Image (cartoon, rainbow, N blue to C red; front, side, top):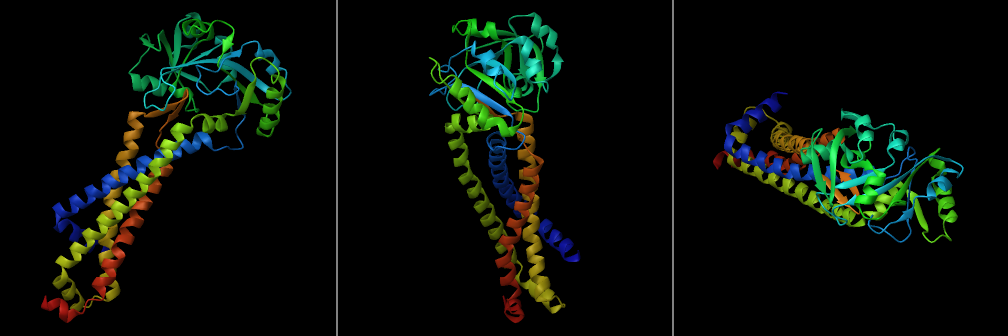
Length: 378
């Protein structure tokens, strides 16, 4: 503990150099945390788990919602398949089918079926009843409303569709927090596709074990129809459909590795400069009885403190940034909410600690091996 306090005092003696080093570390760890947050958010919506019970029924060989058209009369047929718990037809309209940072997604659903299909939806402002009563009303996801600055009673227009905000909703599903739910007949007419046609069907099955058998049964039922289907689990559908966005996010991993390398080099350089400027001081400490291990520990503590303090600033800043800004990525009508996680926060702090330790190992070893007489003569 005494060595740790001494290391802290040594850092504060040269405030400008220490602050500049910590600022550089903070910038690198901010970038690392941003990349890890994006990767973590993507993993949550693409990696299958035992709790997954949702299937997406889409038009075969179609990707963008504008090209996927299925007859609404498929609904009762899908409901009759054994193991199907709930089905809801959805018409989707988006302002951009490609990868984009600002995607506006409308989901047209039967008003009477939405709450039954998704009981986890919570109206945090406005009311569900007001949405049902008004044909051009919209239930706007919390993140969507925050990003657009929308409140109850506002009107907004996108994709040629004008809607009235009747409620703001919140859900544990990130997709629901980033879309606007409207009445299915209203969106069908506003999108000029006509009544009776939808983009997809969302199907909830009794258990995750039934996902593949029911998906095959649905596709086999409509295989010879004029509008054949392809049915996949929701997360597999996201991974397959949003390939462009996933490839873009995968590339950011290299940015994260670059940030880690930059932090490692920055802290190592700073510690080397510190020990070179304190050669005589280190020799005096040795003459006072400090062992080589204690000298090496002192230098290591200084590197760890620089890495940890600067890393904490960068990691916490990135966490708060994504918490307040509510960034989303969209592709093919799907939205990915980039949400901060306490797990990533702890991981970033641990990485900063390890980088500070690794960066100080060589300077610590070099300082502890320096002969006392040679150090005093410099």
